[in-house]
Length: 404
Image (cartoon, rainbow, N blue to C red; front, side, top):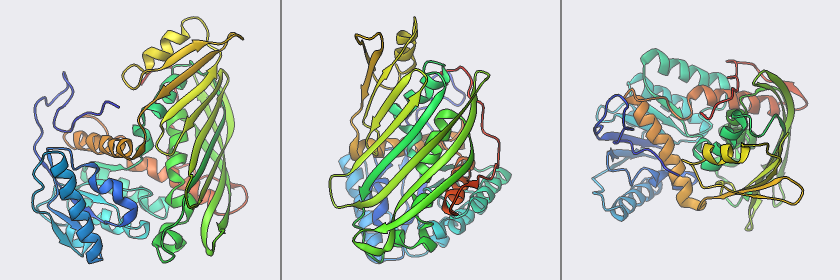
């Protein structure tokens, strides 16, 4: 990955030079946000005046992690304050931005307070339990002219971005299949808010929105209807830990209509040996992306004259792509990045960097709040049982032949 540093605007863009230090408060510091607690620590022009959490132990752990990460990066840790009241933190006059990582049922209230106080907002997914609440936050941010973004980290994956560019350049042809298999860890304490659908929204709301957005962002298609089902944890019958969703998408590429059914399975049940994979089918062939934090992309594609060069050039600023011919005339495609926790933190940083630049009038956020509302509409439809129409909301963007 080649992220943009928040204090170093790209050459040739308006506002060249260093941006001032951003004072960011954090609301929410539980164990699910362990990686995001320190993702911004290596950025020299970011300061953390305060972090809020209800439990004193969570506050202490968050501040200790920040100090350790800053010192590891050779940066002064400052003197961040631990506070209990997230709403009070959101309104503090000494903050420029607020990161809201509370449980989902509390996110709209805290985020709304931050926006009302004129703070830039970096909102952890899902952002709300209902799409209408997140759409209201997006409208509030627009009305007050405040930069706001959702932490949809998959948009910052160089491998996912490769697929998006290849598809939109017409290299892959029309999409035919999209499948996500996510066997994840599920050993959180029984009383954790994740297991309470009144607080988390359930698996498809709390976690599934990542992947609903990923499919929509890559393909630019419109979700028409969705189906879903859920099952309990095999060792905790009271915990809803497994969910399957099927989503019907329709779209258009360069004037050609397409239709596909995507499936998304999430199971938070593994004690070890997690397994995550995406299987993507296009007219030109198939692609496979491994791991929750995308680490390795492989595929077999039927490519026309000039397509190999176009494929590699489209990914040149993201990741090296190896292409070799096969005996049947098709091509093997492979690309790999580091993956793991550091790549995950890098992806979070990229979203934050884009928000910082947007707040300075230098571009748009990586994932606007409207994208979160669109993903929540899919999750809501899939959570109602049976095939249900997806509320249209804002129209999906058309996918044109472009590397953008």
